[in-house]
Length: 88
Image (cartoon, rainbow, N blue to C red):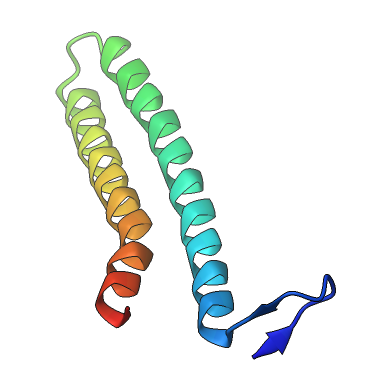
């Protein structure tokens, strides 16, 4: 066991898993926020396309990538919980 500055002990595994969980949560939040911004940008491109097929295609692809980003963010957020459940 390791004793921290407050004098409480904790195991190395729970400390590492806590760090991993915090990093995954931060990265997931960052990815979700950027995906929302990209969705707004795709909507703006679509609204200002004016019937231009290349802009509509660009907006559609951008929206698709943003949704994929959201899915990846959700999966990344759940991975530490899954690992903790497997390792006990």
